[in-house]
Each structure stands twice: as structure tokens, then as C-alpha cells.
Length: 171
Image 1 (tube, rainbow, N blue to C red):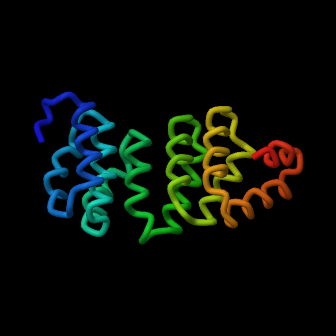
Image 2 (cartoon, rainbow, N blue to C red; image 1 turned 60 degrees about the horizontal axis):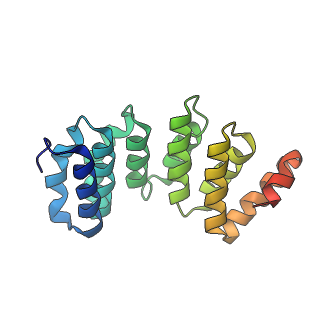
């Protein structure tokens, strides 16, 4: 794909390749990892993980230290199936980062993971997050999920943080 194209168009095409392509497209996406547009890089990481997560892991692993938190979050989703504990630990730290953009990416990533442990991290953030936008994002994850794991995490958060219980009950 020509990197001289409009980055918005490239990022959308990359999403489509990730959704409808095959593992044969993996190598065609690799050059996009060096795009100056971070949305293109983030979408390329995500698409590569969708096409063939096993083959993509060693390719995208170096991007775990990317400056852009969206790129990091997408790398973590590719790594998550094999490195669950490590990914959860990384996301826990990222969710407490001073920069809101890092916390937002961690919240988004945790919301993508179908694990009770991810819900625990989100519930902890719900009671300590300063940003009302991020609290709403976390609440949206729990409203959308509504499964036993997420309800357990919310119950524990209410027990551990009684002063936040009324707000958590509203979910």
C-alpha cells in the first residue's frame, strides 16, 4: 500500500484488511508499521493480530514501547492470548499512568479482554479515576458486558470502597 495516500484512507483500508483479509496479507502490512501516522501504525498492529496473531506477535512486540498508547494497547491485545498475566500487569500500570491518553488506551484494551481479571482492574479504576470521561468509558464497558465476572468485580469494588457504592450501583 502506498504510504503517500491520505492517512485516514490508509488506516481505514488497513482495518478492512484486518477484518476481511487472510494471513497472506500479513507481510503486506509490515511496512505500515513504520508509517509516520500513528493511527495507521495502530491499525496495522491490530490488523496483523486479527490475521494471524501467532505470526504477528514477534513482528509487533517491539512496538510495545511505542510512544503512542493506542499502538501499545493494540500490541497488548495481540500478546494477550499467550501472556495473560504479563499483559494484565502492564495494563494495570498503564491504567494508572499520569497521562490520560495512556489510561484511556488501557481502559479500552481492558474492555476488549474477556477475563474476570480485566474486570477487576477496570473496577479498581472506576473508583479511583479522576477523569469523568474515563469513568464513563469504564461504566460503558460494564453496562455492555453485564456478565457474572463483571458483576463480581463491581460487587468487590463496592465492598472495598463503600463510599463509591452508590455510584457503582447506578451502573
